[in-house]
Image (cartoon, rainbow, N blue to C red; front, side, top):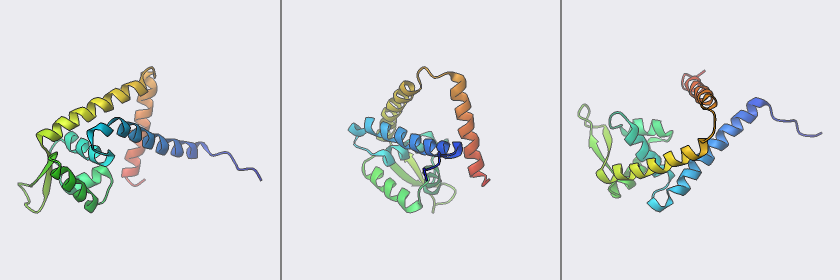
Length: 148
């Protein structure tokens, strides 16, 4: 019996996963000369994009990883002089992650590479298509986060 063709939902799910993975790997390849891997630059990017310095717990949630993993990553980034942790002024048990000057410089380089890659990949695509795709993905993420 021949295999059945995947449903459109299966195709969407597979394409979403594979595209997100390929996108991160392509950016990671462009950042190899920085001496920091995907987990490191993603951590730095999340800290840089946060409106206020995130706690280790908030950072773990943003990255979708467990608390001990984010602590290990922050330990490495701190040893590398890219991040510093300080107690929260509201709760000294909570540590907040801050970028150092070197961390901000590295983030600027990461952002430059990521922006250039995004521009080259999306060049020529109609704005309406990009907007529809963004709205679809944002809506799907909201449904997931709301437990639907």
